[in-house]
Amino acid sequence: MKILNPGQIYLADQRYLMETTAIRQYSIFNTGSFYREHQQPLGALQQLDDIILAGSKSTTLVADQPLYYVLLPITGKVSYQQNKSATTITDVGQLLLCSVPANTDIVRSNPYPANWINYLQIVVQNTSTASYPGAQTFHFDLDAEPDTLINITGSDYPFAISIGRFGGRREATYFLHSRQSRLFAFVITGAFELEGRLLHERDSLALWDIEEAELEALSNNAVIMLLEIKA
Image (cartoon, rainbow, N blue to C red; front, side, top):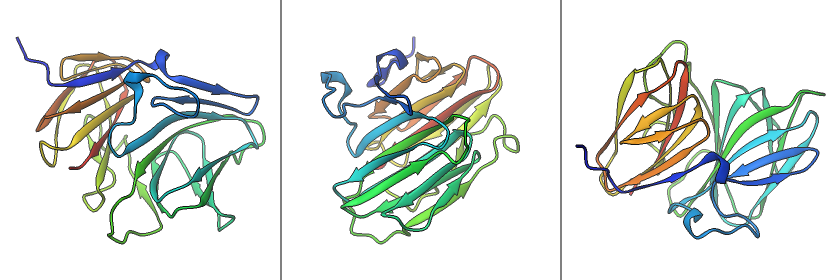
């Protein structure tokens, strides 16, 4: 019998929902007045929110401290703007990574008149003194690299993001940079078994004290994102 490594599951139906006529935001970690003991931020990973935004609507996040902001569209394009600067459009198959200074307004908008869009936003603390580009757009192609974990962000940042789409019963192994790193997995579609845990669509899993993580897709066209917070 395989020994389970230390970890914590975050079920999709236990996320906090903030809903208006313009937005539905599902937050995995504690935010605002929402607090649960077992849903505190995972080290430097402060937020991972699943956002559905109505046509022509916008939403703003205020960065009180330096941070890394990651935008990953799931359906539709997303418009991104900082402090009324130039607008960046990010599409499916792209990931926007921004190094954001303190006291910055981060505005995301839906460029479509009527259609809703869905995207993930990830917020990571930035305590580094290293210099990174203000904004970078990374490209990936799930069709060109099936059944593979695609390293999107490379090795330059204090975290690494990978994504993969798998056929049923396809397997992969993710190797962490060090045993002191923490790994956070988010299932975008389908179902997976990851290190002995069953994860359904929009479920998440945090793992630590590991050197590698084995996953197996339990459905066709299952998509998973992995975020490693390096030690």
